[in-house]
Amino acid sequence: MLKSMTGFGRSQRTIGNFIFTVELRSVNHRYHEINLRLPKELSSLEESFRNFLLQRMKRGRMDMMINMEKNGMIGGELNLDWEMAEKIYWAAKALQERYRLNESLSLHHFLSHPAIFSETSPLPLKEIEEELFKALTEAFASLEKMRLAEGKAVEEEFRERIEKIGEMRRRISARAPLVVNQYRKRLVSRIKEFLQGEYAFEEGRLLAEVALFADRSDIEEELSRLRSHEEQFLTALLSEEPVGRKLDFILQEMNREVNTIGSKANDAEIARIVVDLKSEIEKIREQVQNIE
Image 1 (cartoon, one colour):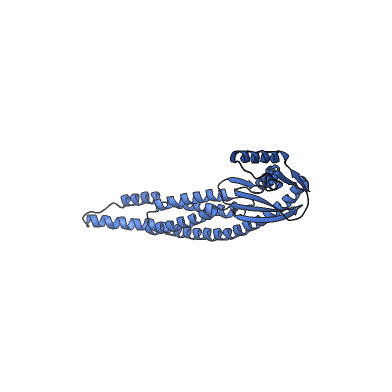
Image 2: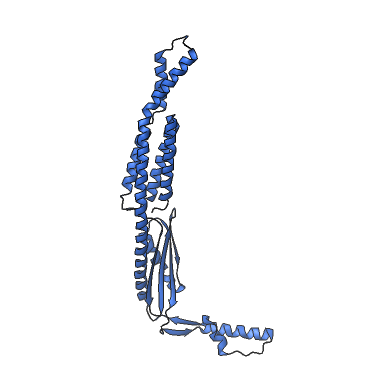
């Protein structure tokens, strides 16, 4: 089943004194790109998170964000950064002397600088990691559900458009033999008009000219390859593996065959069908850009 590269997933976990929110957003991208935004306290887990996503996503850009908020519960230990407190003290003293300030330093000045305090989590990092991976797994499952749903809708559209392409190809195939007959009639008419009945023209040379035209305008091979590409495209839709790049390549080949048909056919009706064919292929290509 096809997967869209666009999706969103979210999950939450309460761990100790904090609420962790894991969000995943994926968008279409030509290559494979993972971007992480984590609290500094979780920086040691970045590589593990990245590997988790790389194993499950083969194409596109994935943004992962973890937000950490206090849940209001009391717990943990409050640590004082004495070195930072010392810096704040001497910086305040320097300001007093430079600007001749009379206000004396008090405990309030230190308490207004949260940088000198830190709260240790009552849970070990291993337990936090386990809970966060559960949240990440839930968020990814939600994202996958969205990607699969969109992929299913796109697959149905692909099948409808490939059927349209097949119908137009069959119309061209039915029209192609008539093109040579029409060319022969036009050629005979022009020769008779030019000679005005004064001279007889050689039937053999006429047939040779018609045969040459038929050879130059023969599109059976291109129509056969186009049909083969249609079948390959539909077969690829059944693959369990990511097929976005493969589908894009098949469409390029289909477009190449259609261009050749248009240049060889020498017929206004086939030319109009070719324009419609190219339009359908382009509509599919636009959608394929968002398929993993």
